[in-house]
Image (cartoon, one colour):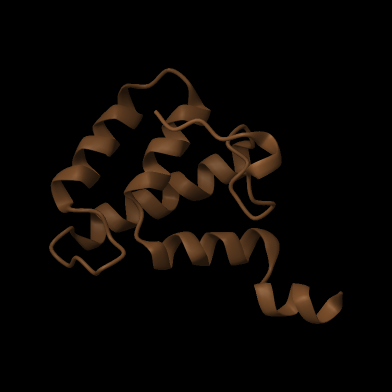
Length: 97
């Protein structure tokens, strides 16, 4: 398991204990499964890894851990979309400063 130091973590990361973030991650993961795992881009995990992470998440009694596992199974484009929906775009943030 990778451990992150709080000071080193990004301000634009999921809030693992936030039920809304957990629900958004679950919905994105379920959509990915529904769409199928046959398409794999350069920023997407292998289909067997997605299934493995999904099984671990489903078996977890800890919602934050389940969200983290599902997050690891999402393609980079889906992660970016979720982060933008939660925090806005990087461009908008930098121009406002």
